[in-house]
Length: 211
Length: 271
Image (tube, rainbow over all chains, first blue to last red; front, side):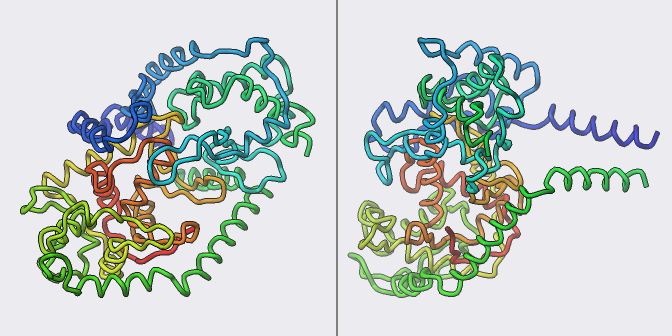
């Protein structure tokens, strides 16, 4: 009985917190947005400044501190699922060796006047920044779950392959406001590059599964 | 009693999750990093910069041939002890919330007669090109060593700035969907091998804020908080905000407010 009461009070406390938690910035959110947008140098090319634009997902995630109510989360997930595009040949699993390279590359896409990336610098998936993958790579981050033995655990059915492709293409199709970037939506990776990372995760010969 | 058993159950579950070779590996890596930091802390190159900053502070410079000794960093003209730890702060004379760098630049313009452009041209150092601002901020920062961070943001302008900083902290944009919170909103996470602080808590924000300005080994230079935060935005693949931009000061106010009470240990030394 005591346990039930304790659980109930924890639950209601959590719920009322979720209901009451103020959006970041509170009543100054609008002003803060204007201030943020006006703090960039005039010399910034327009196509750089476009990177500050927010789509509906970004805006909503900010308001809810990345923890939207389930109903709103579901709406965002549908919206994001509809953006997924596939390679022309329809093949969703590529070359794991290419995927292994992409998983390790964390450069690319830096702009600005102080330390921009040189033109043409390869962009990777930078998977190791957040995930454990091949056993031999010890310098892995922990923001995302460990994906060691991803394919060994889940198998390589068509369903799993499609899920993996979709997740990398647009992570928010499954979990609204996840920390994981939407690699395909932003054309950060091409559909073909995504198929290579899918192979790195699923191919039985890949070090993710073999070692 | 029931409460106690729930607690130990939870502890057990946590232990089970982290047990095994994975946990052993993680803590080994963390130990090595701690040792590395300890070794570096013996001779922090920032100490040299602090000495340079001290002489720049008292040297008569600029068109007005004046020193900075009358500069008011919030505690009164020339009062430096604990000043850094209490910034950003609202200043009546400019009607603005200013951080240490914007206030320092203000002093160099008003007291010494430099133009803003002259003062900020070299706001960060490059190989072979030292920055007076970095030296001065290192010196001013060190004058708060051992003092608790004290930015309660009680003035309405400061409270508003902290709120605006919070807004920016959670704001997602760019080709990687980043916000500050993505990496700095959770406990005990790592990017590659680098530990990430949870900047939404006093502990996390305190650990981060207390050691700036900091010598960065990977950069071979002392970085100020402005430099640090502007680089965060570069890492987020956004354009860079202008030096001394209000959005950077807002983030600093939010972080210093969260860190308030943490004792300063500056200049720090980091990866």
